Length: 110
Ligand SMILES: [Zn+2]
Image 1 (spheres, rainbow, N blue to C red):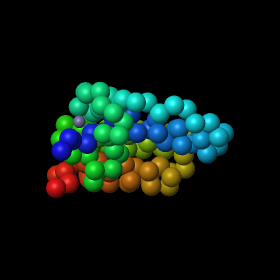
Image 2: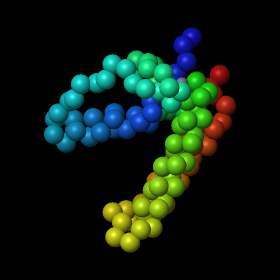
Image 3: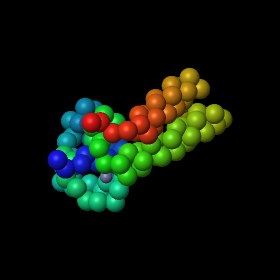
Image 4: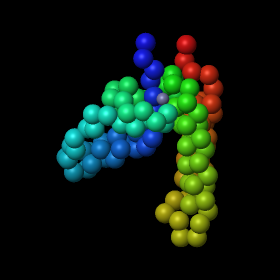
């Protein structure tokens, strides 16, 4: 079975696409291939943002690092004066990102 990877944008493009579709009824084209955390170009269907689905070990390590980096970034933004996040929003997001990082740091499914 082919490995399941994560894309380098952690599927943020998909979240943006869904938001645009929901808000403006715009549905931009879905990319046919994406760049993975392990540096390959693969079909979007061969990627996932779910730690229970990603089987590629370098992609799991990439996702763990990126989620920890994002958690630190959100924490910094949440504590900045005039932040668009409240402290409790930032704390909640940081906890979720760290939880995801921990799941990607665990052994892959099966
Ligand atoms: Zn990979």
